[in-house]
Structure formats: C-alpha cells, structure tokens
Image (cartoon, rainbow, N blue to C red):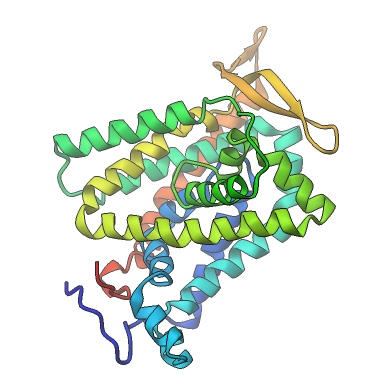
Length: 334
C-alpha cells in the first residue's frame, strides 16, 4: 500500500450507495446512543460496527498537509475533495439524531432501570471484544502484552475518584482535548474523563447557563484533541495494526469494570439540579433468587446481556465487515 500524497485530484473516497450511507447513519445513531450513557464510549460502538478505522483515518486527514495545502492556497474544491466528508456527515448525522431523540429515554432507563441498561451494554462490549479479536490472524506474546496493558489501564482508570482541578482557560482546553480523545477510544467514556478531571459539572452548568466562553474553550480543546489524537491512532493502525487492535481490545475488556450491571454506591455528589450522581461504586454479584423465588430482574438482565452479545455477532457476520474498508481509505503520508 502506497503512502504517497496524491495532490490531484486527492485521495479517493470509498464508493457507496444510498443504502450504504443509510447504514452509516444507523451506525452513527448507535454511537450517539452509547455516548449518552455515562461510562460507555461511542468509540466502542464504532469498533463493534466495523467503522472505527475509517472514522479515525477520516478525522486524521483534517490535520494532514494534503488537506491544508489547498486550504491555504484557497483551492476550496480540492480541499473538499480530499475529505471523506460523505462518511463523516452520515456518521455525525446519526450521532446527533441519537442524542436528540434518545437522551431522555436513556436517562430514564439509567435512573429507573440501570441494571437492565448496563447489562445490555455489557453484552455488547464483551461480544465486540471477542469479534474484534478475530481481526488478528496470529496472537503472539507482544499482542497479549498489549492487550494486558490496555485492560489494566482501563480497569484502573474507570476506578479512579474525581479530582479537584482549576477552572482556568488552559485546563478547560486540556479537559476538552482529553475527553474527546477518550470518546474515540473504545472502552473509555469522554463524560467519565470529564468527571475524573472535575469538569463534568462545570461543562454541565455551562450548558445550562449558556456560558459560551467556557463551552468555547472546551470545544476548541476537543477539536484540537480529536484531530491530533487521530494522527497518532492512524499512524499506529498503519504501522502496528495488530498491536493497536490488541491494545484497544484490552481497553474494552478493562472497561467492563465500569459497565458491570450490579453495583452498590459508596459515594455520591450532587449535580446542578440537586440530583445525586454516583462517583464511587463497588461491583457485586447479582442475587439470582429472592428467597426461593427467581429474581426476575437479574434473569432479565442476563438475558439482555446475551441479546447484546448476539447482536454483535450478527452485525459482524452480516454487515460489520462492510465498514472496514481500510484498503480503500484516503491515503496520507506518515
């Protein structure tokens, strides 16, 4: 595969039908649904649905010279042709649609039926880790090591307690950049990273109070972090594909600590509306029986986890691989 930059007419985009783009909107919808739930990453859903590598590469191009040269030369048409914009537009549309339409419903489930909701996502993440592992042809010691490092890092990260941090403009930039990097990493929630950095409530209050200045700093940091981190991920995929995949699988497995459905809350904080948000929780085993009678919620939760697992297997066998078009992605120089 050549890594040379093609100035004219620019890197080719994958050829897709209208139905393919409808499918991308649906995949983006799943990513948006995951992002609404704290602790679940939209990057995990992108990985599950087979569009992760194309998403990273498409974002990566925004920070490459092949895009910025025509921009600085005011050759807007050529710059536009370089971007994989139909893909990005379809996925972004699905994400936005999910956030608008599902936020209230998922918030209700998170408050009133958390065990059932987390069980479904647990099955999705576990199934995706298994399915994605099949992309590696041969598992060797370096790959197992990368998987262990990723799993250990994610396991420790999701167990951290939020910090007290400054509200300075530079830390808002940093928080936005770090949170958005987490959002495109499978297994790590951007909202959870904001919580760890002590900026979840700051951003939430900024949204409620229409604090444009605070939101602008966070948004600029997110844009810089997204494009910059995509450069690293894209480079890793091209140079060390199997090791990178193993590391990301480890992140997904480690995040299961956060997604585990059955928990007891040890510490909470109040949000801007006075509602309690758990910040320290301990995982427990489910009660399968209440006395001599089966615990209906626990068995329903296990059933939902199985359903989530089966959905991932079905998507992988029927449609997931159509999204992995790395050999047809826009090529940029490393």
